[in-house]
Image 1: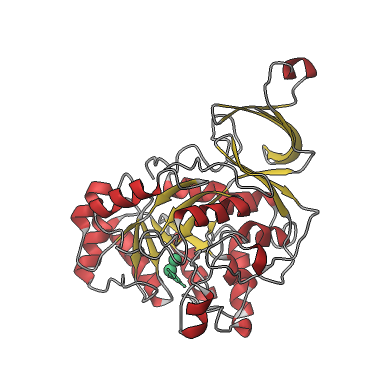
Image 2: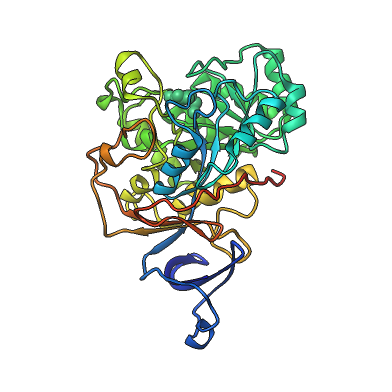
Length: 401
Ligand code: DOR
Ligand code: ZN
Ligand code: ZN
């Protein structure tokens, strides 16, 4: 397959290129001649639209199994395809929690042939100390996710000895840690010399802690969720409740600065769908995200974020941090995971367009920064701007981190 007239960032420069894809991989990035084209069976013209590496969202709660009335693998992955997300990593607070090898095995087989995009799993650290289970699965998962603060699900781990064992046996640890718990997580990572991924940082003080840890030379990474960049506490209502909660405009600004100076490594949505009924009837933490993260981030393109940084935080860095093999860049040898966006088509985000089973979006009424025209996973078009085509999603592989 040949993708013609792709506007790409190539060696750091904006350029128009043709991308040759074979067996799901990018095999050539060039300007092909008419003669060569005769041999190619399928040609798709991108008309000079931007072609970005598919978004890798390493922070999603797909609710499957156990909570599939909120979301399931099919609907969640479909929402990803619509949003330009070509790989998602699922969190362990499903029911049962992903805290044993057996449960992970079941989750993996349950996901087969049900996803439109590629996927992986975080394993869960348990307060009952499942470090023996971690040893069995650590090469098959993105990380061990540990909740250091209370949130949706009952996965809080508080006991020092248990935390130490979980850190000791993990390849890399992701944490839900807020404020002083960020210090705690960094202390444990330093002590056990482990890479640490700080999920959804939301406060200026947390970004400062991360900046200092990086200066010290520790392998500590930080994620920001789009809602902490675009929404703030003055907007909070019964729908816009999540953990960590929305913060001040000043905090949002500090997060943007963190992205600009490289302190913040990734955008992860914390896609946490709950039904409107649940949101309206009781305090329920979490909002959906995968469908709108790219179009929201594109709103600030060439303002608060440049194209290079956007691709880094949404694709390249997530793949690098978790060692997701063959993904995250438009480069020869990489998977043909691509998203095509029309930056001139700025549409109003609407609840009625939502694909996620929860049926609503925190961004309704906001004008997006561009429209996803096409999403491709390993050379397969899974979304053509209107239709969802093929459930060809597969589990990703991991390299050393
Ligand atoms: O708001 C949140 N919702 N924060 C979390 O940490 C978990 C998530 C969920 O699973 O609903
Ligand atoms: Zn969290
Ligand atoms: Zn989360």
